[in-house]
Image: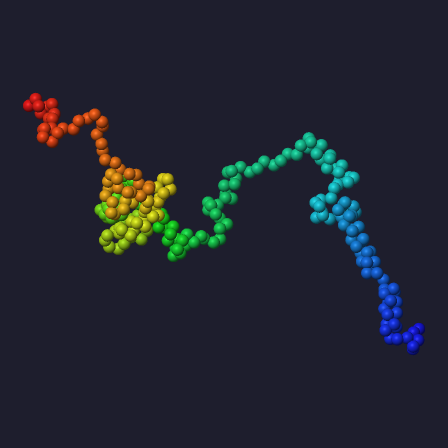
Amino acid sequence: KCSSTVSPQISGCVRRSTSRRMAPPARRRGAVPALAAAAAGLVAVLGWGPSAPSFVLGQPPAFGRDAVVARRAEEEAGGTVVMEAPPSDEELEGFVSEDPRPVRRIRPKRERRGTLCYARRELNEEAERLRPFIEPLLMEKHLSIKEVTFVLNRQGRELRHLLYKPRKGLPVFTEHKVRRLCRRAKNEKGNRLIKYVRPQWLPPSAPGAPYPPPMKDFYAEVPPLGQSLPAADEPAALPEADAEE
C-alpha cells in the first residue's frame, strides 16, 4: 500500500507497471486458433480423412481400394482408353446458323440508315462502282475534271442508277461530284484517282509540260538519226502506184 506521504506521480507509475505485468501477452491469445487452422488446411491438401474437399488443388489422390479399382478398370479395357468419335459434319449442320455473326447484339453504325458512317460507306461503294468508267479517262486519255464531267454526262442515262443519291434534274454529274468521286476511288496500286487528274491550265499530252508526279511526262516524236527530210521546195515523193499511172 502506498503511504499518504508518497506523491501522486510515483503512485501512478507503480500502478501502471503492475498492470503491465499482470496482462497476458497479445501473441499468445491467437496462437491456438492459428495452429488449428493450419492443421485443418494440411489435412485438406493431403487428402486425409473420410471426406476431403475436391476444390483444394484438384481431386485428392486415391489410396487403398479406390486405386485398385481404377487399375483393374484400365486392365479390362486393354490398357488403352477408347475415346468417343466426334460427330460428323452432317450431324452438325442443323446446329449451325446461317448468320455469320449470330451472337451480335448491336448493329454497327455503317449498317444503320441515317448515320454518318452509313452515308460514307454508300459513297465509297458509289465511287467503286463508277471507277471502271473514270479510270480509263484519266490513265489513258489524261483528261481534266471538266472534260471527265462532260464525258460522263454524255452517258448519264446509263450511269444514273449507279449513283447513291442522284440529282433530280440535269446535269447528272457536276464538277464537284466528279472531283469527290476521284478522291474516294482508288486504282489497283492503291492510289487515289485524283492524283492522275490533269490540271486545267495544262494541255493534254504536251511535251515538256510540268505534270504532277504521278503523271508521266510526254516527249515530241523525233525521227531516227540518218533519215533526211524532204526540202521545202522539192515536192514529196509519190507512191509507186501513182508514179506508174
